[in-house]
Image (cartoon, rainbow, N blue to C red; front, side):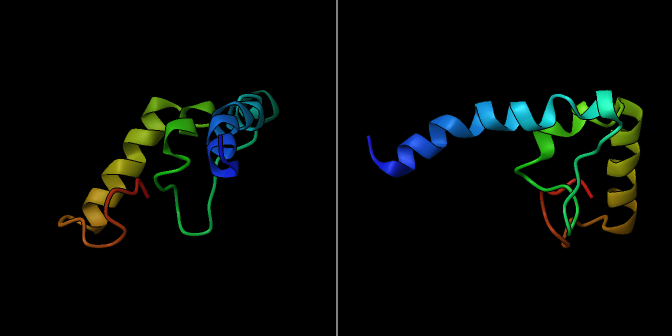
Length: 74
């Protein structure tokens, strides 16, 4: 196994350790340019389904043709 393979194997468990306690402490998933592909699946740890729906609605409203940051939530 190469160094790169080892990093990929550890990435998911490390992300779970980091993101799992967020709601307990009132934390949030954030990124400088919005929630993108890497943090998208962890967003439910800190945001309700209603909040995520609102983020998607805002993205769709402001960028109906999905030209700005395609595939990103917000």
